[in-house]
Image 1: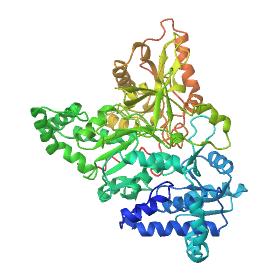
Image 2: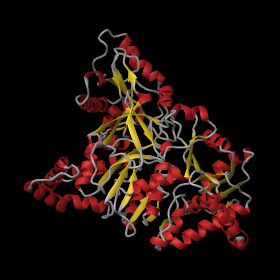
Image 3: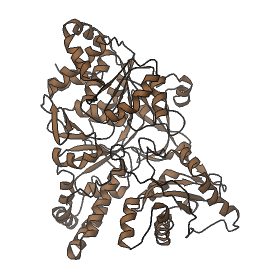
Image 4: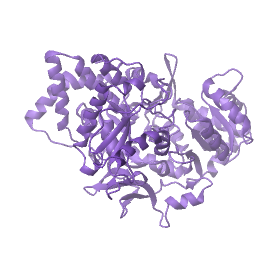
Length: 635
């Protein structure tokens, strides 16, 4: 009888019974891949669980993990779930104050970290926290206890503890708490989202039905497993019997794609934008007839729509373009990609069309940590797909649009609440059980959910018109020259923007145009750079309503990253932080306006000097914006 999955760890029995395979989980040490079979996965997870019991951990204790992606994370996750110990996964990229807050707030008993760097960073913090009894590492670190000691302990106590473990497993109900996931904290301190087994299982089972891939297919996992999105899809992959290969070093994504040849992976829009930019850049390197053919094929992608019937002439052109160009794009991404799931922010429709025309469907979805997470996702299994939307709502989720446009959600995947914060829980879950997402959206054709902005991020100009900044920022970031942007202007006469350029692209552009500069601080003041940025912004303004147009902008010489504080670990803007950091620049933008009776209807060509610390260091181990990713793709 097929094992029914009601708790996360029930996946193990299902995996063993229906989809036995030698490469259930895979990882990489140095240049070599290694794998665990389904039986090894189950055995080590049970050993880990018994090791936890031998350490004296009890149901509802908290264990935190801080690591990059690795197959061994699953042993810990499943072992914790089986013992009723609550898993608190934490980003490996946050600051010391955030670590200290989360570890203390969660009353963590045991901490497991990934490697030497994280151990050295977290050991002093852990030593200060009274509740933490032990710290272990996934990788061998001199002077530290290895997680292997937990496995060994569990193995040695098997005869003594297997019965007790089975009793605990039998006692765990779908309504029991499985995890506390702390939100990335774009405003204020992180909130601990309490998710039950039912929350997680109901969601990943529902979205696992969106495609027909399964036991004959492989995936790679590189988005952080500590984030509910990748974690949920990680369960989804295992539920369907797929082989999952984990990439812990983001610099290895290119080689992983080439070597594993995955059929599917999850991504964030920024990475897909870089892939698209790479396709365009490759075309620009060509000359003559090759260049003409390349961009003819690129322009042809504008015709792509899901479920669209093409006429015979268009079919012929697409088939020819596929043979000459699109097949090379597929090869650059391993040759087997069928689906790329995208979430976290809006994806530019033209990128979805480029990928789709090349036979790599982009399945955009939407959800929050509080909803476990998926609320809606494009669904090829049902043929329910629409570019520019996040797809239809999941079958077991209800959505309604409030009078002010806010998306409300109800269903088994809505969280139990915020840990130790009932008052905050009451602010987002009303008396009827509707979770208030804080996002503004519409249902197109009564079916396809489209996100238009964040409720709290919308602001009003002094003339009474509302601005939805995310929509404008996404348009700005579609430019090759712009990496990040923040639209401002609450209470002012017009909207403006702070722009962090795509310095990698801008440096190449300057080299081609023989523009010399000492550093980025000097670069952003170059007249040629400012004029080019003015052209980019002006082009985007043509697509906006008059009151939405960016009347002024200022370039900044810093890259915005999670490490420097402007972005959350999921690459969302920390608006309060950015506003505080650049308050002088913002004041200057609007002080010019206040002293100008015309209201500042033109873009400034010459930008004032902004004294900011230069930050050009690339952090390949922590950033999603992967330097060199595109350069290493071979066409």
